[in-house]
Image 1 (cartoon, one colour):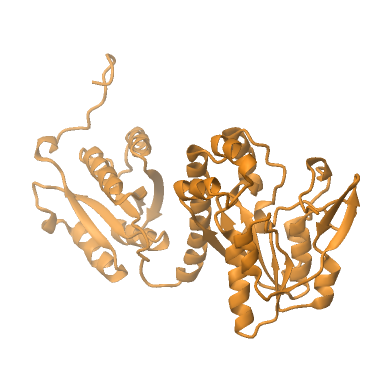
Image 2 (image 1 turned 135 degrees about the horizontal axis):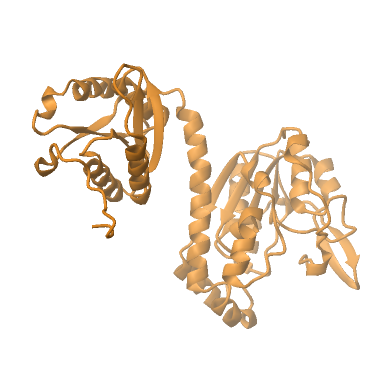
Length: 394
């Protein structure tokens, strides 16, 4: 018997439930994410279930797909398996998860493979396995599942174009992001291709085609990068929620802020900041503060030019208002989890004589920020910024 659903069995017209209409699940949802088949998601899921079972938890296998791999089947061990439902479809027999049997068994944890799977028509009340899982979660049962990155709706079209392979089974992004815990099961492209050659992923007759098409080194490298970025994005969201009320920045990676004023040294300071960001391999923000005092406003054309320059250097420009420049910059840095603050100082006077720089240093010390003071080059002192003439860029 086979649990693979023929492509025509999918119901493209089925309307998925809207996220806002669903009741928050009582069960906890853990998801193992991978770049492609064969990275070890199912084994990781079964191994986690086995560890919980050994600790006395009530764990069952709602559905696991071994694809005939003896190595994967060995991870089932002594875990209880909920019997599947058998369905006749177009002259063939298919096995699907028995949703009602899982609900009736009501375990503490259900292991359910292949989140993106399309159910055979007539096998149950839902077209997609992710819909089955949502119902199980709503009934207070914890679920551990698996999915590959190409099945995310937001990425599927791009991956289709890149690989030339039709991605029929898709999961709405909000379903994947709904997981309480997403764990990446990683494998280098070289390692995964070796597994393929050794017959640990596909039957021997499918290996040559797979290696030259979907499982090419180029494709696997891109898929791995997409998976890494997705998990990193999820981790960053959790991190920001955790540290929102902390007093200082969290140094998981560097984030640079440079204060910019419409002065002759601004180009040099932006360029130095961009080089720093390149060395740290991080982003940077260029912030211009409109102070609330009586000083004349900066030239809008010059600010627009500086904004263009910051963008061309890979930075993000923002204009903010503040009663005073120093506290406004430091407050913005704290709000955006900045770790490095860059400011300019007049080299002729000496940065230690600049009242504003001293203000920034004091405020930054309280906030836990590192400060870089960039001196204006002597050759540009008192010289207006260079502007290209009509003959070109100079």
